[in-house]
Amino acid sequence: MRLPHTLSPLLAAWCCLTFLTGLRGADWPRWCGHSDGNMVCGETGLPASFEPGHKDPKGSSISMETTENVKWVAKLGSNAFGNPTVADGRVYVGTDDLTVSEDPRFSRSKGGLLKCFDEETGNLLWQLATPVRKKGMHPEIHFGHQHLGVCSSPTVENDRVFIVGSAGDILCLDVKGQANGNDGLYQDEGRYMAGEDADPIELGPADGDIVWRYDPLDELGVCPHDAASCSILICGDFLYLGTSNGIDGPHEKILAPKAPAIIVLNKHTGRLVAREEIGLSSRLYHAQWSSPSMGKVGGRTLIFFGGGDGKCYAFAALTEEPKETMPLELVWSFDCLPDSYKYRDGKLIPYYEGDKRKGWSTNKNDGKFVGPSQIIATPVFYKDRIYVPIGQDPAHGRGKGLLHCIGATQTGDVTKSAGIWSYDGLDRSMSTVTITDGLVYAADVAGRLHCLDAETGEVQWVHDMKAETWGGALVADGKLFLGNKKEFVVLAAGREPKVLSEIRLGSPAYSTPIAANGVLYVASQKYLWAVKK
Figure 1 (cartoon, rainbow, N blue to C red):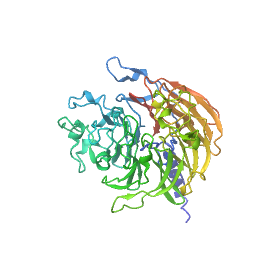
Figure 2 (cartoon, rainbow, N blue to C red):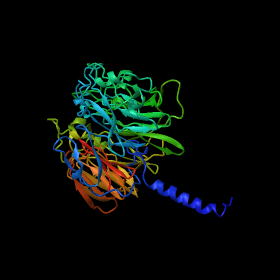
Figure 3 (cartoon, helix red, strand yellow):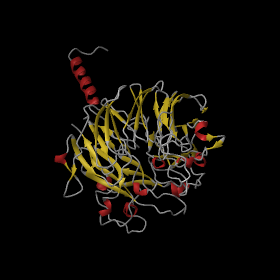
Figure 4 (cartoon, rainbow, N blue to C red):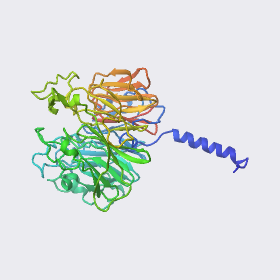
């Protein structure tokens, strides 16, 4: 059909306006921003540097007059590990409850905290305290790092926020908190936030609102190790997540070898609908800490997991809800540990020989130790391939790493057939890689950022930040944004290395930065900066 002559210019103008509006920015509602795990966004005009400012001598906040290219700054607790997320005018970030513990309503030991800020002003809208869990059902459970707070990056969809709490439970929250009343069947937020041994607190509009709660520890016998770290993936009506199931305190045995390492919940009700039953927990080296990603392969949606046993897995996504809890369908697995990382002189290499803290360890912390690792990073799905590194708890020190590029189209055990290339020039890594313009950017725990050709694995450059690095790099506006233990670094993206700025934040930046709606969000352990020219 031909358009009327007078309508064509109007339609053209509307199309142009729509296109330009689409370029202005977008929300960042989940871990990695996208379900494929790739931390790339189309934001433009982001500053290559900013001045974080100085602490106000009269309090703990930052004096805004001492900042530059900063829209607002929000005080966190003393820890922040997951990246912030942004949706519908709100900014969410997990931390610990160092600040809320000063609230006279609370009389408990330090746990976790989810904060929700106004996107425009940085004002606190509401917060939810997640209490410390006692050992309870298993005296040997090693869950002593709950003080790290909410490590899970909040996942936001419509009027709901989903997190894994610092105590390992899964929470569905109302995005408006208690400001619009206590919604949902869950009505016991006052007792939940107060903790096990305290009287329930009186709720106010600035408190969080739990819609439903599911507890894998009580329901499935899961025994997390150190901390609960997984961020939640939404696929259709379902939530996919790892359980952080792991070993005991002395690092000698798996406490719950039959508990699932991966579970699936109905996002509306919290009902358990599926779990892995491939024996993954019985093979864990340390814990199941990776977060899932997903992608469509051959018309079928697959869920990708990095296993605590060093294998990368693809499961079939559910297409409908089963009447009874069902096992997840395994589509393929790829062992990311070659024999040379498992055996020495024909004998298995003990996993904890690679822990520099052990008196009997042969690891000299120089990056040369070769031994088994698990997968902590999120597998990134890109052009029918998976990119994923191996690594260990950074407290174990340096060691030989390995980054794999895996074809995602096969089925079964694809270890011998699906490997496209591997790169062993990096240390162990817990950082999720980033892929754009034919390049892979991968950080290792020693603080080196590696730029590789995505097709061949050929090294383009390596930049040594000389500081321990946990998070991955965000690519936006032709720049790479990456934090480490010492500073926040901005580099130019591309096949030639170029450092644009190195910024001291006053405390480590272990989380991954994000960009949303024209603003860069950078979290240190103590503050969250909204950075804008």
